[in-house]
Length: 194
Image 1 (spheres, rainbow, N blue to C red):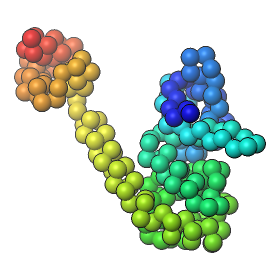
Image 2 (spheres, rainbow, N blue to C red; image 1 turned 135 degrees about the horizontal axis):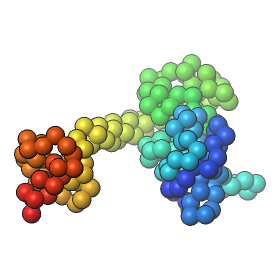
Image 3 (cartoon, rainbow, N blue to C red; image 1 turned 120 degrees about the vertical axis):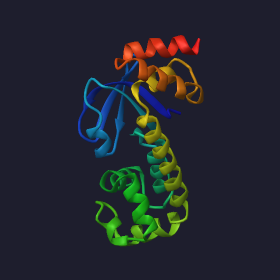
């Protein structure tokens, strides 16, 4: 089963992208929001769900595991197949889907093409407890990503070289005091760490 793809985006046709992974092109259906963030020529990574049916075999891709988890939860609801699940995530987004289900907003769900009042009710009843857990996980991942992005270039470079954050904080500060140029800061920091 295919669960993750990393490669160059060679086609982007709105809701469908083709990713070249080591010479093999995989056609992946993605939410529109994901499609906008995958320009042709970019190296991208998608978390994938491989859906096999008796008459079809398709890949559905997402930029995060939590998006894929919400997709899987939606698919677990009777009457909510992969295309409708993808439409919900395309229209509402991951966090919007979680908020809509948590708020028990049936009108919000029925705005999605293919979701009628009965299906909206069923989605809310079956998923309102389950989406809370995914929402908490997604917030924790986003918080961790924000902390990593708040690091300056010197700290990121040292972490990429294998040093632990706890070991480099004071060294990075000292290196910044000695120079304003990143290359010089890196040399000074590496000298101090040796």
